[in-house]
Image (cartoon, rainbow, N blue to C red):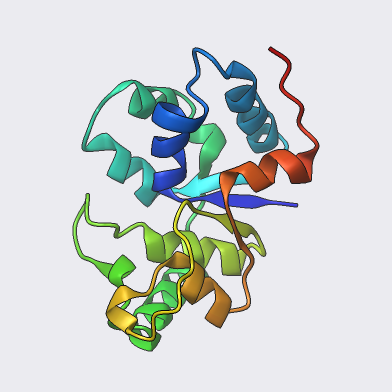
Length: 160
């Protein structure tokens, strides 16, 4: 299995769920998956993280070559198609810091047949302006999971 991470996964896992000072093996696991070519994120995720320029950004920046998925004309065409197909999707905001990486995360998932990993949850909304990553993944038949599902799917066990 391969995984494409949304910005919110990195932020929430770093600061709330699996901080590196108490859960270093989680971050080592992400690195191992990336080394195997099974996990990454688009460069737009790193750009979103750069706004804070904090320890998380520095950690990701130091591993940019390991985690950053390559772009292509095919990917950019798919991003344009997704924007045209879902013009009201809240993840298509323009400008760094406004969830603009969301559409790239989804496009990478589609292009590379990856599971999209996001903290966002599907709800019953029918309003396209309130659609989240899981909605668009569902429409596009791409699996969207939460970070804890990587732990289970990979069989990771953390011993403290």
